[in-house]
Image (cartoon, rainbow, N blue to C red; front, side, top):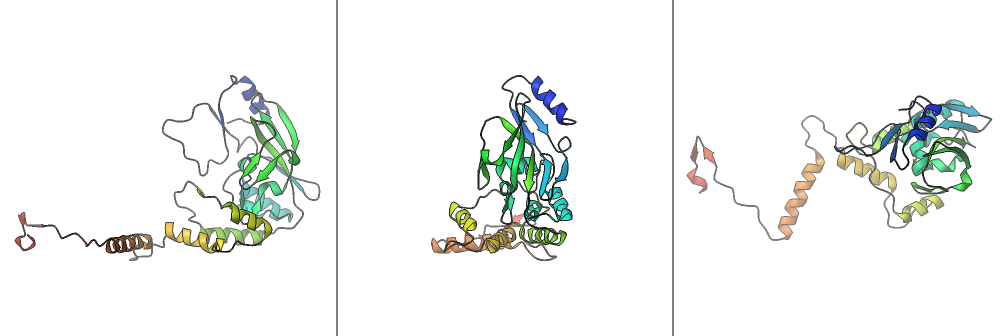
Length: 266
């Protein structure tokens, strides 16, 4: 965990060539095997935490800035669209690396330029046009470069109320607070292309309704005395499958009463 940018540069320059490097932001949605990780792990949250407004419409943020903090600050500055950053449970560095997005917004739509660092500690400033971005993916102009910071431009407005509305929407449609490894699905290409055009392919269910159904399946309401719905549904489906296959429920096995076999069931 470097103390600042200079400490990070010095650390990278001292590393043996070819050492694997894993960058970690908040560590959310991260699962590490028992055997550990070969190489070094660099945690950026504390070392790269600068966030400031530059000019009328631009924001400078380092890679360790949590996306939720970026969203809140942009709301205070009335800069948007930045509300979607509220739905990204990580830091800006990770959002840049995978073009993270939520609620219809994507990180690289707001990027104008970035600062990167390589394995030898060299720092560069690159224009956003040097990168090709797509759904949850970017193509970098050079390998073995990682993001230190980005300058984001916002042409619209934002508000704390809009941010709260998205947080409430996320709370209602996702199992927040439950053990999870994050989103393990991606939208099919047809849906992604349609979203970019602003329409929806025929035959695909509404995204919001689909996510709500998924949340209900994996996070059923557990009121007092109520049985989890998905377990009941699983048993019902299993019974229907046995009926279609022509199988009947297995005969009851003999059971013991006070240490003896009940002869009525034999």
